Length: 423
Ligand code: NAI
Image (cartoon, rainbow, N blue to C red):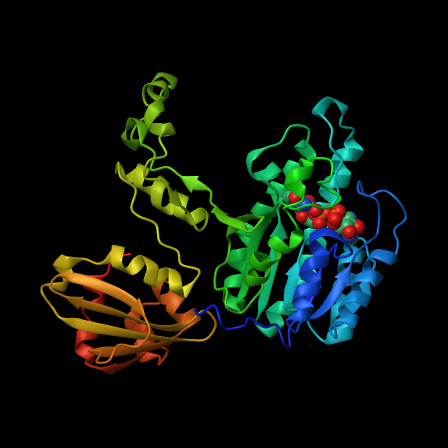
């Protein structure tokens, strides 16, 4: 994808919670600048969530957007209540007819060591961050599902991902959002709803006394917004991912699962001593993989254990078309190709689709995006059907006979595919 192609949000409707200041304000401004109609939600309370709320912060950002020629409406609801969440979504539907993008960003802090943390400090933080995201996402998801498009962002924190002294309430709420995403990403697959999570680091009223002043000066929220907005765009086919972002530095965070070991061969109940004897192997992260869903663990690792296999089978589970092509060279089986020289062209239609080809010759496989000059055969399929095929939900013959998969050129050669690639 060329850097020159401007990513736009024309025709899109976005909700940004807690958009009256800090990071949310910048997301709202940039979405509007790129064509989105924005609901600027902010309750307008204090940093710790106290107070009766105020219209000022949301109104100010709406004014800023309008001054720049953008479209926005203000909403002052509290995300911590189900009614508040419903009304935020209603504001979007009433003003602009739908919701395409939701950035769950509203947040408060009530830092205390565990023994000083009163139940209300724990509850208030969970209510705004975790319950708040549920309260807004649930009604928004319904609207997105109807339209067959959605981009949802959860806001986690390095405190939740890695831990931070005195923030057990905040860390719990923030990592809870990752769990929320993990399941919601699966519920969204069929409806082109992508759910991703960001862990920002930026100067704001939440961090003004936490981060050192010289660091704060270099950490404008503007540096976080590009990654967050990319995740909100049609271009982004990823779902279920977590990113750190701050000061223009972005990386991906993943929950990794080690290969592990079947102690006792799956035939006898291991003793504590057996566990102790195998501790180094249980702990070893070498060869760890990222799992896409619970079944990757249950159906692969645990069933392997029951069957007495030591090596769990590799895991698949694709959520984005481009991931298939990234993994394709690694899935190539030179033996299966049996010296064939073939070019498979893929034309994947719809969201996250595009053109890729696999060029197989001399026992090697090259995968590239774009169109090959003389493909042996061309496979045409919609992105969602392609993912179903790759995830084993539909078999190739059925996809072909039902017309979902169209093959042009040398159809017979396409039968090699199952032998040549083992994902
Ligand atoms: P901020 O305090 O400037 O912005 C948060 C906004 O949310 C405020 O305008 C506040 O009025 C609003 N808000 C609070 N409770 C609300 C509620 N119940 N309903 C509606 N709006 C409410 O803070 P910042 O830094 O921009 O934080 C944005 C998000 O990013 C938060 O979820 C925060 O936890 C998260 N975050 C920020 C980090 C940073 O370095 N700034 C680090 C990690 C996470």
